[in-house]
Length: 145
Image (tube, rainbow, N blue to C red; front, side, top):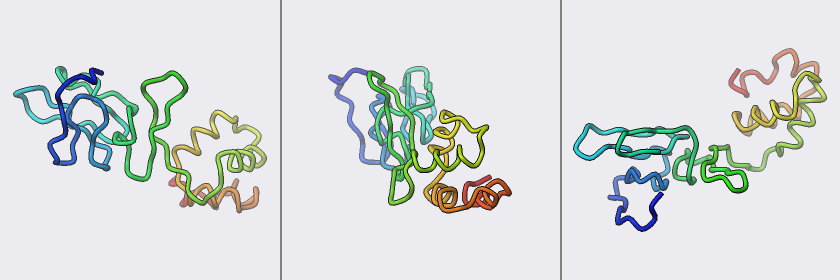
């Protein structure tokens, strides 16, 4: 992305289509080609090409995520993923330790993806629950299953 361009947000809460993630907290960003109908990238997406109105999955900054999420990038990567912010609830390590103990078929990779895709209520339910209840679906509602 060209950081020398003169584009700036217009104060409407949308991004300016340059893909640098300057949206207004709802995670959406403008990706409208000049002179064409409006195109908006949804939360969890960024505008990869404003000329072709191409939205791609991922984030360039927190502005491409919902207000209760953060953009997490691996070392050396420009594009990350929106992940729920850690609050006072259980950490990913605590959550995955409990989940893999209760279900040996769950890998750490699968658990990490499940942790990112669920909220703090789900994390707390899993960590505080007993394996029998968890395996019988006691946390399904909290986890959105």
